[in-house]
Length: 517
Image 1: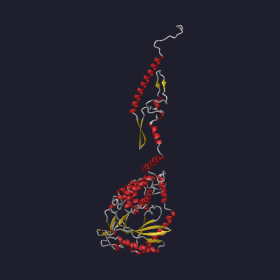
Image 2: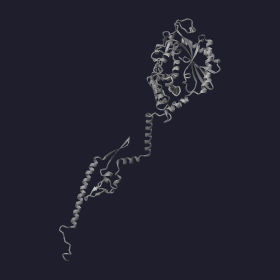
Image 3: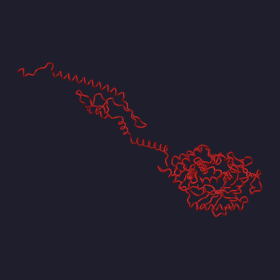
Image 4: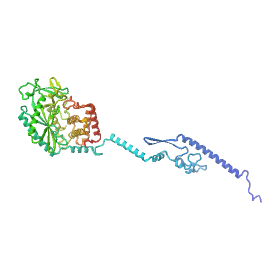
């Protein structure tokens, strides 16, 4: 074969040696990559713990595998020797890694792991957790967000519905009034004929019915039977200024001589006894089914129970002395209506007479300066209360035409709430009465004098505020008489009972008045 036909041998050109050299270079590059991978893993291990909040009561600590790369790292293109970018295939695996089959299964973020762990939660655990969360939510609603008695209904509408329920029906009013007037007329005539000291007796109608403050049914009526006295001397019988002994001044012959002791003091107990006996005699001549209620200790009223048209009516006949004299010194700091009704009204009312009724506190045989408690008299301003509640506006046009206030409505609601507390047989509510509610309103009117503060459209707000006033009085265990500030009307209740009552009323106020609905 000629030299041209043979291929030329190049020195050092050995296929086996070239292949070995290439394999050596490949191994070297692989070792460099492994070193870089170890450096990356070491850095990743230092931040391998990821805390993810699953639930307020649980926390999961997940360790991130050192070999796992985030999806962003997986998608990052690698630089090849030729300068082209090459994306590593997702299905490739590496020796020495904890991922043996499919690394993509473990390339999940910590939140995804948490969701997976939560999905494994058993049905019973889910039910328990939902119950607990619902209980907590309900507790928060009851504590932080007061509810109305009818869900989300306007509180004003709820209270207006209650007031509608408390209205006295006209036909019931007329029937009751007819019965009461006939009984009262016959008793008055009998007293004038058969009692010498009652010839000049007169009738003063007071109480909630005549003040247009009666609620539910016209079943209670108060009638004061008054005797006029002009020259008397009053001596305080108690430190609070509410009770007095009555001495006749410049004594001459008088129809009441039979009730006067050696010190010229009128004995209330003897007068009340004679008064009661005469009313007892007239009952048999009445055309109605009437019974005399048993006498209550310290009570100034003679109470008749009348059955008419299947309903019971209570009539209180109260003996009283009408005193034409200056109001006692204990009233100087009371009756603060200057900013509410004006100074002129206050002066006019203070010139009017006041009344004394045969009522006492404590034991009737308790004696002070020769006077027994049962012969003492309690001062009354019921006629003034009737007058200012009738003309209750700061302006003369209040409740006339379109301008209306909610003062009386608030009082009716408070009276009804106290009545419902008694119906619930709460021992603490036994000594509460409508006069506590009336006194609370009078203080509130004197404090918030403008008619705009009692706008009819603000019924819910005004009633809430009135209840807060009453709660404060209960917590302090003190409710001053509106006319005699030194007399505490809550004197008969102990501190614990007052606190419990205040808590109960606060609960009613914060939960939409369920007792009223």
